[in-house]
Length: 167
Image (cartoon, rainbow, N blue to C red; front, side, top):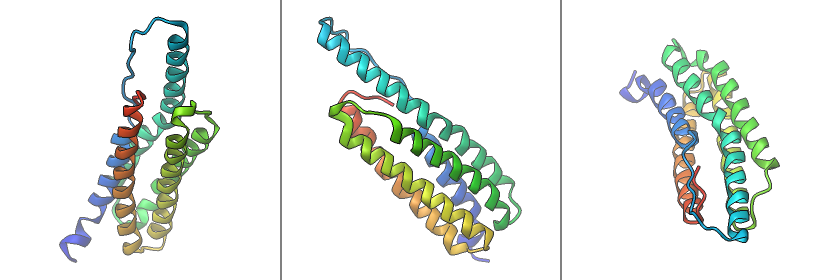
């Protein structure tokens, strides 16, 4: 067994950890503006941030569970069920994000957020299939998908932050 193969479970756990770090809720801010239009804009923005946090917050605990289960796995096949459960959590977050009506200034970014969540859910589903079939290459693809998810999520987070949205 090569070093690369021996460390595959650790790489799957690392991918789940990346999802956890990105999905963990952050803290929002208040800019202190006092006019009615600004207060309404702040209210809309805060409501949107709260809705997004509610949708993606459970992904953090789902990812923590996946990390723990990956560490306990004795074989690749043992990863099938935890990956299936994680995929369902990611898919639920995606559906909840789809139901959120974003403010106009965040609409494009919101669509990209939904698509990014769909991609990690799809990748997790493929990893579950790979684990069930003892397909080591399929699990490697999950690690690569996790890296892409991390890059896209960081870029989206930066763009949202530029608009004043802090998740």
